[in-house]
Image (tube, rainbow, N blue to C red; front, side, top):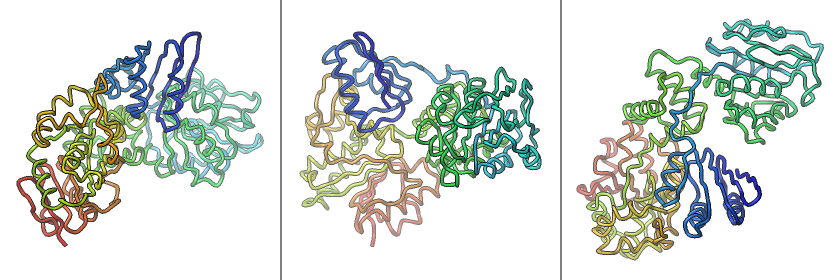
Length: 553
């Protein structure tokens, strides 16, 4: 999303969350304005190549007054490596004050009763206050408290005006009254209807967020109308997490659909997913292994990344490192932050991702690869999959090698990773001069003296991989743990990835590779990786010294 604020002689461009192709064209128009330009980049960890190039050209080549502020340390380091000055707004996540969850708000209309009962019925007893609002007629009988009392250990009440808010209590908005929370007290009034409703979801959500901020979480469930939607942007700015009921579970789905259309929410979840999330957020098992297992389960549900079968020691080290770096002292607070704040999860994802890579890392392995090309691909191109491509050095190295060998135009390289931030950086093909010069000797060892640098264009403050090399490289997201085979390949290279998986996941990935290779196709592994015993009749040694295996019939 792009927002622009113009004033006399200056323009402030705000980039927030994810950008699309239309954003690039819009940004190009906005940055062309004369005068001083300020760019603020919020909750974005990577930028497309075109925007990076525009920023560099305006700030460095044209020497325009361009002030760049951002919230991502990853993006800040990336831009600095390319010679683009910037200011990091939050130098470290640990400078934030982390607060536990203290309030849960559930709002709905018609068709919401069943969902409310299901969620409350499995909610662990915790140090929180719960506020429930349902659109009901003014003369409706108060029944919800009686229903919920049989489903929960929480105290359940229709509150009176001015009642102190206490933890361990469920407060239900009474018919024909708006319910708000002010200074940790219940406020009831019969003012005009809001969004044709009294009680109003919008009124309650707004007041709870103003009172509790990031210590609150809202769930908007089924119903007619659009009550609640117009204030979601405001409550998110106050730090409150917003969950939307999956409309497919609602007969009355206007409310969740209207909320989704605002794009001001964190997650869309089914009822069972909401119950599971709340069970993890509001009760942390004293058994650390159980707590971590539940955390990994929720990461998969919320963000789509499955770490359950990664090497457990590696995952634990990464989790602990991020927790310590953030300055969070308890596991319960860390679980809350990583499950409700995308920035914290992104920090964790970057930590779990293994991004140690170089151009032509381990030259003897590439020389062995060259020998394979000479023996088997002397007169034809190759379809190659590089799994776990990280920031792109390996696929670009392979592309250079194929070009040098004369078969690149007839070849195709698919480069995949599960980390979208890393993938965008890789597809940009922009590298610091320090990184390129560091790897020049290794590149020349494989390609020949002086050849490595011929595949880069000097852009002034950084190098760009040449267009001839970038044109045949396809970068896209693929998760080895959860995604299936997507093509048939002559060669698959997966180096220094499998060592971070447990045995079950390793065998799953080898089956994936077996299904994805042509008969007689080749599998290239890292120097510390081996084919499991259960697959040694399907992958035969071809060049054991250089970790190259061939698929049998």
